Image (tube, rainbow, N blue to C red):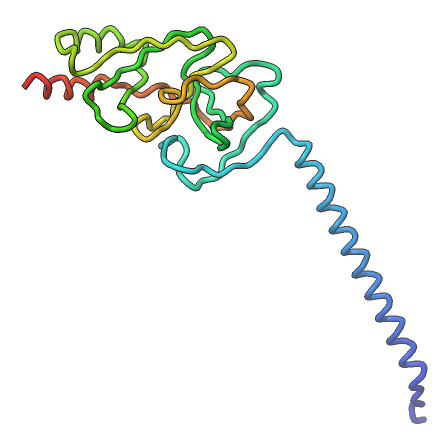
Length: 208
């Protein structure tokens, strides 16, 4: 027997199928939006934030244009420690530097008085090298100058790992701990780079 064509029944079935598909799509959309909302809320409540490195001042620890992960709750419970890489606000900008001096600590800087650049070249001296550098330059007082700096209470002294490329506490002074936003999470810490090798060359050239 030939099949009987019932156009009304077919149209009704197609309509129901379309409605069911639309409902399924709406449910999925609502579920996705809800999930994204929960993720956003969770991330906002999380102590972690992402940032992007600008400039070369933290080379080689942090490379330009590379992302980094920052933890923003650490310093609500304890002060920044030497070696920490911190994010802080200075002059309306976010900066990333390493803490090399704690509150009350004395640091020594090596300055070049004959440097005519807008920012006189100066380096933070590793404590273990101070006596050796003073002996090295003892007979060359016009070549370099040793400057003593005491970090005030409630502040830290911050410097870029690439000291020759960094604008930091050597120029704008210690940073108040309350202006520190968070701590950059890095797998290892880094000490102040040695100056002995380079300064031996500078001293020899100054004697000739």
